[in-house]
Amino acid sequence: MSFLRIALASALALGAGQMALAQNRVLEIGPAGLMERSNRTDLDPVELTAGAMKSAGTYELNAGGYYRIDVKSDGTAETAVEGPDLFRNVWVNEVVINDIEIRPLGLDSIEFDDEGEARISFIAITPGQYHLRIRGTTGETQRATFIIK
Image (tube, helix red, strand yellow):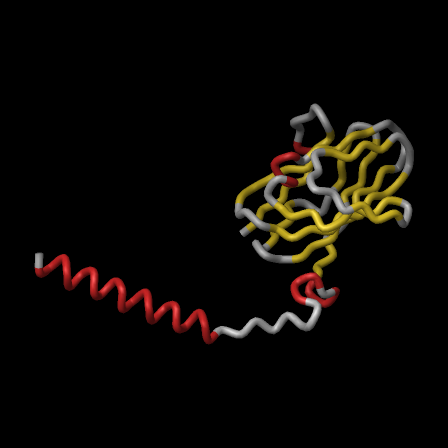
């Protein structure tokens, strides 16, 4: 019983010390908070053409980071991109299409019937590997990979 009391007292003391350290930490993210423009990282765009998706390779993101990405279609084919696993593990701030700002509660896919661009701004939340892909495809040339660390 004495060993258990010592172990519990040690754990509580260690936890209290860590809490004190966490309380002294100061985040300097500016008066606008995390969504301040200076905190945003613009990612290389995803470009869609008939049957293919061009991206900058694997996008490596940090959990808690604020990002913006453009998804562009050249209009050669009606193309839908989906990323339900990605969109469920980020917080989508807005989607901008033709200077119209959309603030969704959730997002599953975006479909391009013609040439156009959608700009998505989001905060990465859950660590893992996720994909944005042309709907119904599984090929490497038809998806972009996002790794949230």
